[in-house]
Image 1 (cartoon, rainbow, N blue to C red):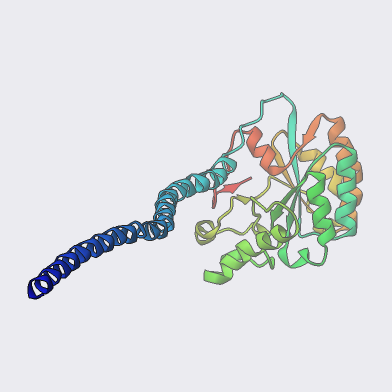
Image 2: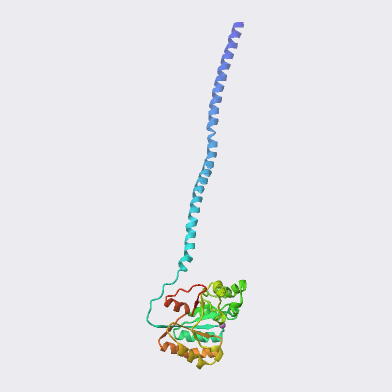
Length: 290
Ligand code: NI
């Protein structure tokens, strides 16, 4: 009995040991299954990998996009440089050129009468406008622009520039340009100092070429159309810059005779910028031309 008990105890222990081994093996196998369940964490790591792949892609794109942005900006930087290139000098055509200029406007009715005669005669002129009149006659400014005549600056307040300095002088030199820019897609490139009054300080301060004249009609003084016509015809020559004022009805009257007459005489009536270009001159800021 005892032996049998011993035997059965032994077999129990042996079987138990085997059982433990089997259980342990099963446990190991299960643990193996469990470790294959780690593939669940692999699937978890797949989006993680994808995310890191996306991060890698975006990390690649970022330097690409920063590499692109300067090349996007380059044309922007180049564009003004191209447009600011001086226009090539026109071919000399052997025809006489004259630049009619009108100061102190714009003035609605009289300026527009002059514009009409210019257009009827395929002629252009330069209008040196006083800044503080521009917002009173915005439509006239637009008509001058549309006609192809040149809009230039005659300062903002028509002060003698030689009596000003600092920010007051700068304002007088530049404010008209700001007002013109707000109205039409252009701005004055030339400035005529009131009274033709220029000093070294004005030349130094001016961002624009300073345009004077070589034929003075004294139209403002005589207020006589016939005398204005006579004064122009007596002094007209190839390359002349003629000074008139578009504030006066007598000047508009004079233009109705003068402009067709100049055309008959073989003159091309051009803007000051065109006249200088025909003469091969690139006007410089602060330099005086007449
Ligand atoms: Ni003036």
